[in-house]
Image 1: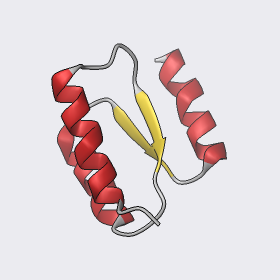
Image 2: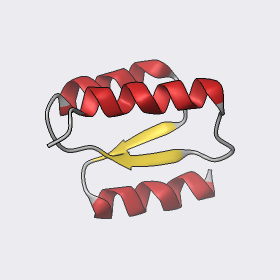
Image 3: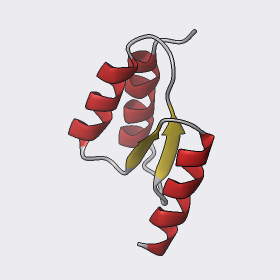
Image 4: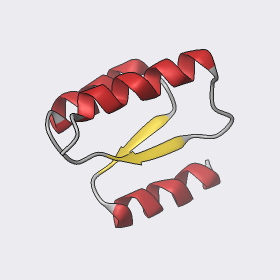
Length: 66
């Protein structure tokens, strides 16, 4: 099981270095998942947290319509 806050730290670091041309949807599940979701929400970056693959698919479609 991964530490989700570690994953989010890496994603935010990558965003700072490279940037993303499109919103990124990630499914987080594991240790510190709530902390990781809070980190994403507070970051202001276009990285969207999903609870499962169905939720992720819906959020991808919604981001394309925006």
